[in-house]
Image (cartoon, rainbow, N blue to C red; front, top):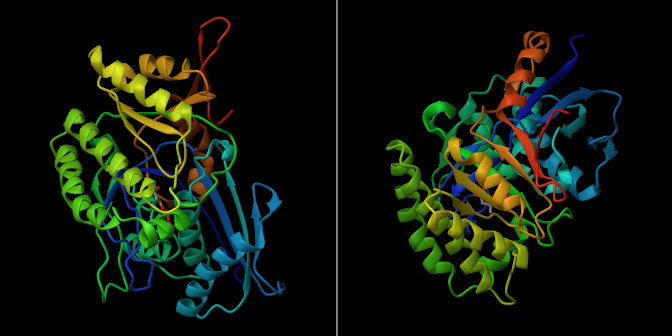
Length: 364
Ligand code: DP6
């Protein structure tokens, strides 16, 4: 009997035009369009095995038994795959990140993109990337975008949109871009994106104006990418992030994802711009600041941000590939891909005693 098993790889993405808020229609539909960049390196690897000996689904995250809550979210996706494929067995899901999960970058995006592809492949479904994206979106909206590499968009959902998938708008090489992540705390975020946006939808008097404004900002982000215009992209992406956080700040009680260090990093980004370095910030549902810049400025930006008191370290990354099945051929070529990734993605940390920049591969 053929083993029903597949291993996949996927990467987190950072939204340049944010999704924040679900449509009141079910089916996990976003109320606003979003556009993100999928990151190189920082890989989630997931193996799904449907096993007749299992009594229930099992989830191992980074070698540890996952919580009942995390496991039930995974079971929700597996149930959809079982319904569609006719597979009846429970599954063992083993998932791990090769980046520090405590960095607050372990978004659900790479996890559910990798899971949707692994589960559907293991069950023998031959889904198109759009179908995998739709499957991932039903569990976590941002995961729909991580199925695609480079720059990916997801339009807003409308009634009757039971199916909705992201699509690629540009390949990773389209725009020379670096993203420097200023890591501000190690702990998990206090309020998850899912809960935070539900609270915002329910209680923020600014939510309606966010929903009205987001499509315009999305349009500018998309145009700036098409034009390869980093400045226009950065300005629009900052507006999207600040408008999203403003709507959460106006919730009752206020939802504040930032710390004092977040504001200090934002001030530093403005100072960089004042001296002619094109650096632009975006922030998700947490305190970390992700800064876009041109490749030639990445070292300077990482050095400046890494020196802000309270910044634990910086991670430098760039646009990368979408979710894919980990094949035997890929396993053979692993040395090549690791060399590529260790060049393309590295931690750059500032040694506070010597002032030296230390670059460390995410693979090490
Ligand atoms: C701030 O996709 O994690 O990162 O759909 O409830 O799983 P669920 O939420 P999630 O929200 C991501 C919010 C964000 C912005 C974005 O990625 O667009």
